[in-house]
Length: 137
Image (cartoon, rainbow, N blue to C red; front, side, top):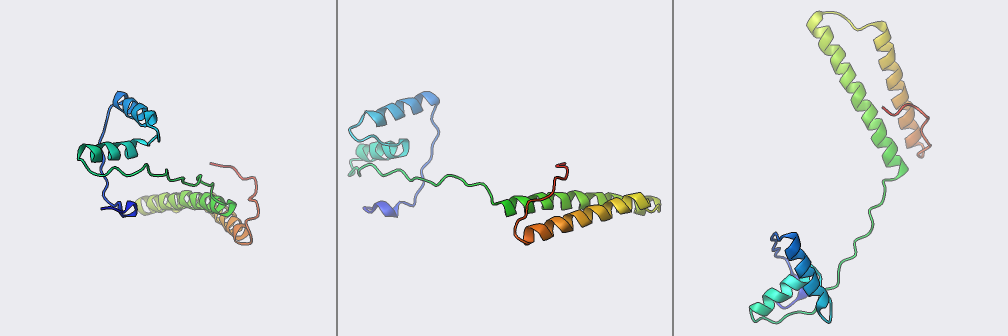
């Protein structure tokens, strides 16, 4: 393979921290410093008496960005909905196993939680308005 862009085979191996330090030092000692991977590639090709390509340019990956406010709000709402679903499931298990219905207070609390989730979803869908100062549990 002569083309740099046709690299498709991955070779990986483990080395000790001391070996990594030696490898890094050897790569830096060259006229054109090389990364670990590039140095290993060049050294192995040199040992195999193949043409050693020039050092490859490191790929700069963009910094990871935080999710948008909408995404964070929807994730928070999803978490609240998951807790609510768990509570409803627990009430259903108790009702099925003991034939006892949940208390009016428990049902009102569930209704209030559903109303709060609905209000939060409406606010986010209207343009990501900042959510109210509810508790973060």
